Amino acid sequence: MILIKHPRNWGLKEKEVRVAARKALRDLGYWESDTELSIVFMGKIRAKKLNIKYRKKSYIPQVLAFPMSREVDSDGLIRLGDIVICTEKLKYEAKLLNNNLDEVLKEWMIHGVENLMK
Image (cartoon, rainbow, N blue to C red; front, side, top):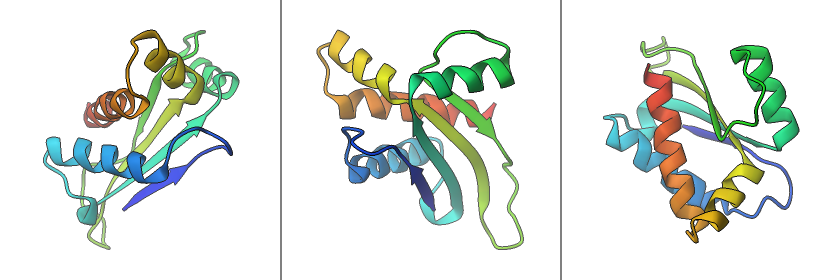
């Protein structure tokens, strides 16, 4: 199960986010039907506050990962955790690299899921 929380007018389609998340899960040997993954998109101020609070780092992050578990719960799901993506940084990176927003999202999603595995 992939849960997505995003701000209004965020510039991405939820379908592309799900595709990127599914690919990241599959690349690391997980299936959407067996896992729960939460993806939260937020602005730079909130992302920086989270980075300060949980990592003691005072900069705007691209991606934050908050792992939960790699064990199977009683309902049969592995609750991997939450991935936080800063929307402004995502758009900036895509523009800077003359890249498609979806391509940068796919890279960041893999990075986020990998961080959940650490």
